[in-house]
Length: 150
Image (cartoon, rainbow, N blue to C red; front, side, top):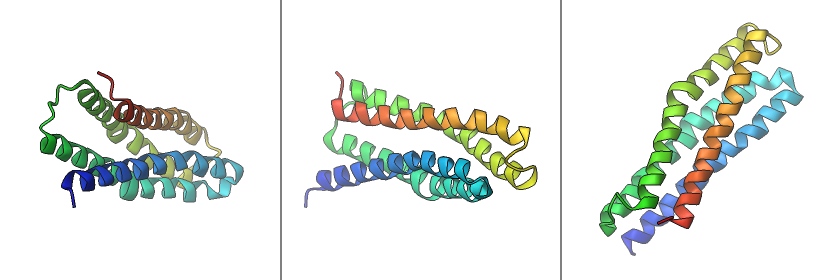
């Protein structure tokens, strides 16, 4: 079988898994809003999916994408390649030092001070827009990969 097609399949599958997982976070958070006693469970679920599903899938998508670039000898200066990589880097720069620690802190505060505490609400007001921005960046990467702007 053609190695390029195997890489392409893995690349697309990883992108679907990563972005699909991220999109479920809105459902988890809405369930937590509807049932506040389930907030810690929902936040822990998001954290586990992020750590064990979404983030590994994003990195595998990056690795398979770069393997296809090497295999086809396509220049990294190709607009859609460097733009996709730049969006991926921006996503990582927002997720790893900001979103992940906020999520961890939300879990701790929800467990200790409660979901009705001002501290939790402050963290929620910071984490939710960041989560939407990260998901938007994921969608933007897919748009760039599909439309391949010159």
